[in-house]
Image (cartoon, rainbow, N blue to C red):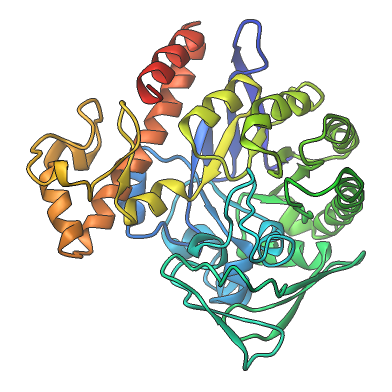
Length: 422
């Protein structure tokens, strides 16, 4: 019996979207669902109990970062991701492929999964102040957001057919990831759902290179599957998702979906590398060709409007660092749009962050108090704001699920988009 299963419970009429249930060894995930990111086996500024109380169902950690610190053996010896971080529910790990992209093709170029900046603190390691270059003694000083000098384009990664060689951002030491090695690391970390090793390309990469990278991702997918199934103990309790690539090109995305659909994956991740304007259409191309009885995860997407587009076009789960990153920097979601608590108008505003939110922060604290915390650089500021931002997205996606069952998804979408993006 496979460790991961999926059941579709209701579909959106006239669309690819659906509500369902993913079953894992550590519980079920009611979909669609927003996946909380705990990069280094911690959701920054929050305890696991707080994460659970705000309604999160599943936590995703980063293979690249946990490999570098504290190390896969410590994770394995400690009982795996869930036990180490005291999270009782379902867990995921990514493959490390996006961090390869951040350090390679995107290095210094301000490119991300949707054509935006990737080289901020959340991608290379939150709290990082330096990145080692090809020589450990040479370092690039980063600004407060972790971005390197725009004039520097030294890449920290070399990609070949077998895998990737990269430099640690911590000390400049050299490391090597292959599909087999990524599987071994993820087996040791022990999440319920893991992802095949892939090559994530820049959205503006030419069609020819996107095709080369996609073909390599397919070969790496086969190798990831073989390595996963060769470890019988791990494959009996961990599921493996393949990652569809192909950039913003319809022909490549459809080819990638068809090829990966023919492989024995437990589910599918849809890699970024498309522009924001292309996203909904691109995931629709893919979802139409992937097996209906397997879950689909959209990697690195957290903007409310993008999530609506993803759900409508057949995506089941989403992850993004945006809610906590925004929260620590003073930005918050509200039903009438994204705001920044450092705006002067909030200093004497004694209303909740969002009058419609049911989170702990909104029930107990005001915009004025949280503005005071930020202006006083108090640690509690980031905690309260992160609780709210995560709850906002978790609750919103929960509402999408309810709307699918009520046949009111389009009405919910129209109402939200009118208010949030006015």
